[in-house]
Picture (cartoon, rainbow, N blue to C red):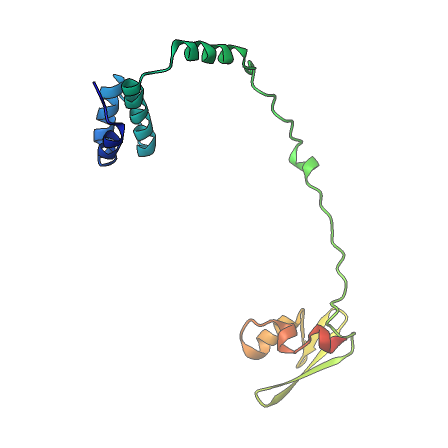
Length: 164
């Protein structure tokens, strides 16, 4: 029987998964639960091509068997790597926190005109003072003034160029 593999492939591509599984069962004599259309197509076309053009020669089969016999096969699974307990893997380090280089020294008063009002913020050693209240950051001061979360350095225009 002469099979035109190209025509068969075109016909197979138009089939649904159910039809492909039925064709697979017809071709191989065994059912499959595969849901991969590309895999089914390859397997069916391979079998049709082998049937149409001839399978492997006996010499090729013997050589393949020799290669398989000579292959270094792993007889036991690899040993799992020893993983130390979490307390030995985790290193806790404290990063040195220095003063912000954009920030003027304690005692300096930062001013800014905002909506026609002059704002004055005093830099303290451990925070900032604005209108008699202490704040931990310039961002907190900016939020108290505007009601919005803003970057304090940007709001008070403390950039590296100005601070230098």
